[in-house]
Length: 267
Length: 267
Image 1 (cartoon, each protein chain N blue to C red):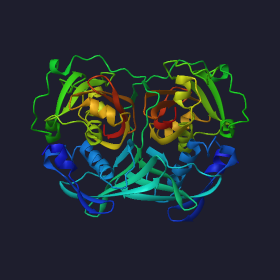
Image 2 (cartoon, rainbow over the protein chains, first blue to last red; image 1 turned 135 degrees about the vertical axis):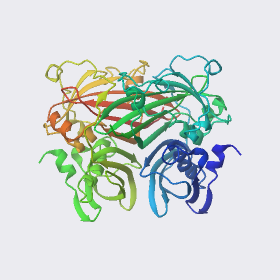
Image 3 (cartoon, one colour; image 1 turned 90 degrees about the horizontal axis):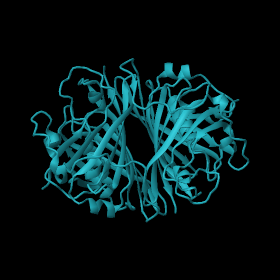
C-alpha cells in the first residue's frame, strides 16, 4: 500500500468517529509532519457517508504535538445547506485535544474561471535534481522534492537574506494520483520561511494551517500523478509568529490550491 | 456608545456562553457584515476569564446568514499550553449553527521582526476623498473608506479587467482606538474581488475568513485611532469559489494583520 494510503486508512468506530495513527513513516522532528495530520483530518470528513460535495476550505489548528500511535477523530456536519456543508473536526489522543479543524465542502459547478497569480518560471521537473534521501527527518522521504530556487540555506550563518521565497516541484514518492488528501498534505511541504529568511534553524511550530481548494475533481484528475509546482513566501514576522503563504499548480500550470499558515518561532 | 462597542457588548449567560445581536447598524445585503460577526465571535474569546494572551489566529466559517436579533455564542478553551491556547467557537440562532470559528491566543514576546510585503504607495488619508454616505448598505456607513485605487467599478459593464487589486484607507466612523476586535472587522472591509475583476455584481458570500494578527498590543496602541492602509487581491477563481487575501498596515506603515477568505460566487 502507498505510504499516504496507509496513513489515510482510518478505522470506523461509529458515526463521525474514526481511529487513525501517527506513523513512523511520516515522523517530523517533534510529532508527525503537519501535512499528513491535516490530510487525515480531511480524510475523516471525506469518508463520512453524510458528506456533500468536495472540499472548498480546510483550517487545521495544531494544539499539541501528536505522539506516535493511535488517535481518535470526531467529525460533525454542523450545518448542511442545499449545496454547501460545514464540518467541525477534533482529534484527540490519550483523552486530550491535539488538533481542531473546520472544513467546508460544496457541490461545485462550472463558472467563470481565472487566476491572478502566474506559476513562477521553472524548468521541467526532470531537469531539476531531486533532494537526496535524508535520515534525519523521515517524512521528507515520502516526497520527491526538487528545489527550483530557495532551497535550504547552504550555510546556517544567520545572515538575513531579506526574502523567503521558495519554488519547488513536489511529488508523492512513489507517484500517486492526486486527490484532496494528497493535495492537503503537500500544502505543508514548504520548510519554515524563517529558516530561509534568516539562514538560522530556530525552533518553530505551525499553529494553524488553512487550505483553499481551487480545484474541482476534473482539475485534480488532470494533474494525474505528476509533480506539482509550489511557491511559498512569508509576509510578516513579529513577536513570536510569522505567516507563510503558498500556491500549488499542476505541471500543466493549473492552480490547484492556495494555502496559508501561521507559525510560532523562538528567536 | 460607539457602534462597534454596541455590537461587542455581549451579555454573559454563564461560563463560555454569551448573547449577542445582529444589529441594523451593521446590516449588509443578506445578514450582517461578516466582519462584525467575526469581531463578535472573537470578543467572546477576549472577554473569557480563562483567556491566555492575545489573538494570533482566527478562522470564522459563515454557515448561514444571520437574522437580525439575538444569537448565542459558545466558546471553549479546548487546549491550554504554557504560552498558547486554542479555542472553538459556535454561534447559533434559533437553535441552528450559523457560524463556527477557531481561535488561537498566545503570550507574545519580542523576537526578530520583519516584513516581506511593503505597504503600497498611497497619498496620506487626508488627501484621498472619503466614500460618500450610502443608503443601500448600512454597515458601510460604520467606516470612513478612502479608495486609493481599485474602487468599485464606475460602470458595471462586465469587462474582465484582468486584475482585482484594491488599495484603501479604512477608519472606524467615528474614529476609535484600534483593538483586536476592530482590526478583525476591518479584515473583511474589502468588497468581493470578483466584482472588481469582472465589473459585474454577481451574487457572492464569504464562506470562511482567516485573520493572522501580526500586531502585539504595543503595535495596536501605536496605530491609535488613525486610518489603516489596506490592500486586497485575489489569487484564483474556479468552479464557484475564489480566494481573496489582504494586508492591513498602520498609518505609520507597521503590518498589523494579514487575512484570507474564500468566497462563493454565482456566475
